[in-house]
Length: 181
Image (tube, rainbow, N blue to C red; front, side, top):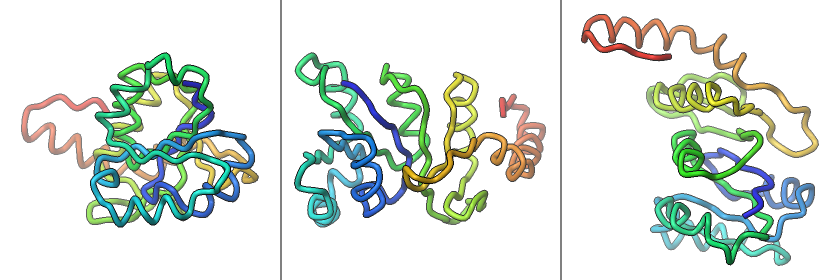
């Protein structure tokens, strides 16, 4: 599988993907990798309807992606892979998905998350996943649409989440566990 882009975006497939990324990447398939979406018939239907007619869309579970990503039948397929969370990206890369960089579009704000850009909110689990990706040498790129200037996300995360590190280290000291953040 030729992965043209691995994108982390809690919205998964939406207008920015179909109008900007698909055109700039010239992909033939969009793989939406989300167990939650794959099991939600309404969400699947909405994403299938927003997809351009020129591109095939598959909405599959993380487990299915792990099974098929090395299948020779898909070796020449040019794909855009969308995942919902940084943790999902880590799981795919640990299983051998080959990418040069990781694009981060939007991560929705939720309880426990902290806004680090106008479109990206992270919690501790996200930070641990981003830290692992950074340590493995993957550039983390914040970029909403293909025409936007690429911004390195890691320095922003380090600056904006220093309080998470302190909080996590305090927890570690109290519990006696070592934390690598």
